[in-house]
Image 1: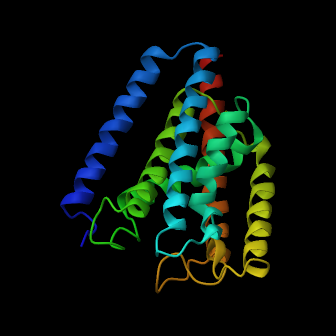
Image 2 (image 1 turned 90 degrees about the vertical axis):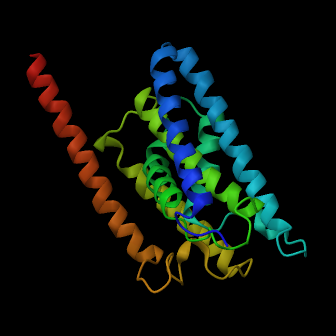
Length: 231
């Protein structure tokens, strides 16, 4: 049975880190113009969307019986992968959706890559729901790093309210899944994301807001000091 930092997971983490480093170096060296950045990020968004879509299709057939409701994402990370992929595919540079989803995708993708809570769900690490689930988390995190390197999203405290809109949309969607489609625990609204912890969405959102606020504050302080040094 696959386990955290067993042979399969260790190899996966090493390969993921190498792919991230190579992608970032190549992007910095070869992607210079706004047009090339736009094409590159749209391709990345398409790849991410395809991975998460294949992951959901695999879940539809996971238990033998076809359950089309599995096409609908019911977790913060999987929904964010859909949202990020579509925002890159059809949105412009620095669009409002990217301002909401970038940190969720980065944090969730990084945590799941290094500490997955579903890695042991099947005897094979290459079981499609497992490997595709790992991949969409990892690819999300790498894409966000690339966005930051290429300045495809301009982090700013002036756009903090997109976070409010985003979480309101997520919770409304989660309520629909739970009340209309009878999906039991969308977005960890009832049960915690990690067993035997208090981390339901009602705890995760305040933590997210505090950390995100500190990041915005840090970015603004760094920018002001750079301006002072230049002047």
